Image (cartoon, rainbow, N blue to C red):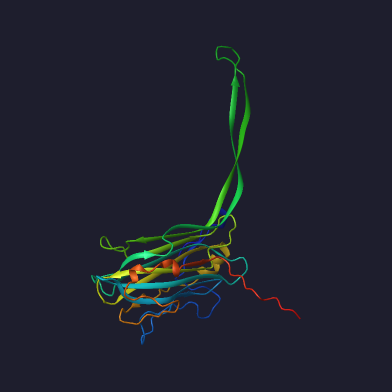
Length: 290
């Protein structure tokens, strides 16, 4: 079982969402592949509790990356939805590691991802004062028979503006292998430390893969989150089931839910067309006149 940090020390409890959250009778079951239809499941991660944490596959498109190689475009939606008042996820680390179906098999290369780099939103500025001080001793010459000293305390206060923001950091990495092409897409989500309102409620991202073959491949999805103390307590109890890897079959047709994709030139696709980060969704048209 993961450890819970002491809240009195100012820390937040860290937990892996591969656990049984309390509160839902079926929330402890991990997400499995359907034995009769194991490929490219839509529901990738689904954890329910004080905060629902989900990952769903919006679109899967297989085709040509360029004239010399095959390609795959994935569009994923991550959601962090509090179910109770004053609950939040303070940070989340997401990773998707791609590999062949068997050891030693050719694996896809992660060529591009949405939000590659560091991005800030919802900036706030606060004024912070810092006071520094110390003792000053005043004494007579050591040659005198009586030595006297007097002490006083000095202090200096400086003021500075500190800017905080909700942050998303994305990167392409090599994980689980000592050599070869980059095989991992990852994102870190950090809440605004001043506002303490949690990470964005949803994030939609795209991943472009280049493949040497038309062989099937798989992806291991992992989401680790850091919650406020009460949420952490509610989500920590139980054992740790593991989600099945997502299996991909390049011969399957594109889903094309968001748009129509050019299958012969996926390497030229602009990932900004499918990228989206939402912090708060406001529902309009809810005031009715009698």
